[in-house]
Amino acid sequence: ARGERRLVPLFKMSDDRYRSDVCSFICDLEGNLQYLIEYCNISKVIKLEEHESGQVVPFYDGDDKKKRLEFVNKTGNTKLCFGGDSQDKGIGDIRIVLLFLDFRKRYKDRVHFIIGNRDCNKLRMATELGEAALASDEVANDKGFPYWVPADKRVTPVEALAKDGKTSPANPAADRLKWMLKHTLGSDGAFERRKWELEVMTGKEASDDDVVQSYRDEVDPSKEDDKQFMLRFLKEACLGFTYGKTLFVHGGVCDDNIGYIPGDPKEYKTLTEWIVALNKWKTQEIEDFTNHPTDGLNSTDRKGHGLMDYGTPCGGCMPRFDPEGKPRTVICTSPLEKGNAALLTDTVTDFLAKSNIFNVVVGHIPHGDCPTVIRTGEAILVMGDTSYSDMGHKTTRKVNGTDQTWVDNRGGAVSEILVWFDGGLEVHGYRKDKAAGEVENQIEYQLRYEQADKYVGRKVKDGDMKDYWVKARYKDGRYCLCLGQGFKLSYATKTEEEMAALVWDEKTEPKDPSKGVFNEFMTPVGSLAGSVGDVLASAWKDATDLTTDLTKQASDLVVKTASDVTTGVQGLVSPAGQDGEKEEEKEEEKKKA
Image 1: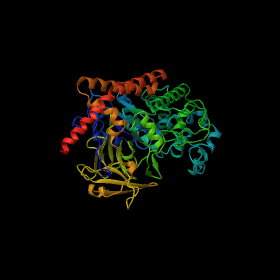
Image 2 (image 1 turned 45 degrees about the vertical axis):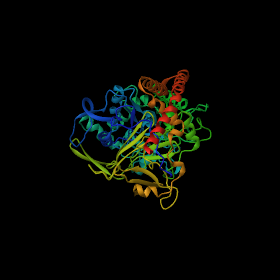
Image 3 (image 1 turned 135 degrees about the vertical axis):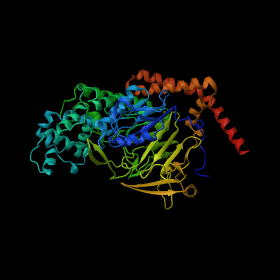
Image 4 (image 1 turned 60 degrees about the vertical axis):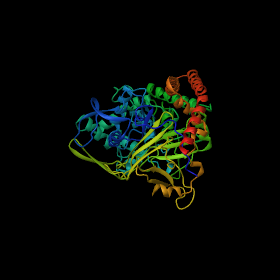
């Protein structure tokens, strides 16, 4: 019957499955330190521990203990991937980035960063808060900037002053920064929140000038490490990261951005080659910026502008990059269509499959209070941004003895996305109205394993629930369905019996990986016995880790070598895979008998 085909497990899930070969994904923290704390509280992979070299991370008001990030299994090969957008909406901008940088310094091969739009746009601070830009009447009255904002919505610095009843800026740098944050970066109120964070970190009152200097310093290569934290982050981060069967990017992949590199006429045919080249381009952009950070004003010829542009909603479509003017960025692509989940195109799924990638995990677009899963044939896309879980929710914390309140939009929602090296997925956590110990709002499900859920990620084809997608499975067995219409999300709850009566879109039916490349390629490593299986598994991991590292720095020659190694491993294990599948069939026949 439709929807009842059981996925053949790549290996059986066990109690120690969180100790190795698994990557935890978190994204879109946007300065919300409290969310990072809650995430670590439920995470199977990472935690916060007290350490004198850490940051002040308050678990409650008045808590001044220093903490740092740590792996639950310190000696294993578990990983963390931060999916980007570290700043702008909370009072933890600086500390979050410093925590991540410290973590990566101690575990360079296990901690990975993806660049989000709220990360690369901070490069603008170097020129736009510079003395030349502040003194320029042309910049102050430029109606063509920011070009990514619709013309009828743009507000110039002079117009912003007039709206505040000012004829001239009392503090030119502070007023310009407030204009940037509110009218060009989508982070109104970040100026005051940064001031609060500086006061928490220094224990003394911060001035407007201190805030301006902090934003300037975070991308100033001449400053000490802790001050130029954002530039350090961008140097360590990448635009795309692959782990086994999974691709991580900030926004998504689509027909227009796959295989595309800004300014490069070459059309890349494989995902591995493309991601390597994309990250190499990013590295060059950061290097150019680092060498000449203050060249230019707000124009397209300033150093690093390519990466700044790539992080805008029309990223990659500046005339010097793409004459057709198509947005071609993995940072700001959306997997939604008119607010609802949308199937991946055949072009995208074919492109992924050619490189044996079957999962795409992203952030960027907030969509409800738990991750959204989109199935398209064998491909699965997971959206992890829940930053608008509880709109208007307020958090209050003491800052130097005084209560400070801000809107964080998270509420009690927190979820962890776990990705195994061989492509398995798990999501667990709570929706926004969770309370300690309550099961009714606790979500937990797996994909691609023997416990794989058969409904999450599927779309209803007909009836009263038409176009609803199955968003999550509750721990008690019920299901959460969701329909997006613009910015409005409608939810429904169904029992498993009610789910069986729904009519499903065939394109979202879970595909048995034993019938396709996924299982043929990966099952043999898990099926081979003894040292041979261990050696082949290790060889495949080494090849993929090498490819991942190359996405940041290696040459085409080395990339070709890594590809050859990968191909060799495939050739070695494919014959054994047939035997592995036969064994599974025998086991199934025994059970039926």
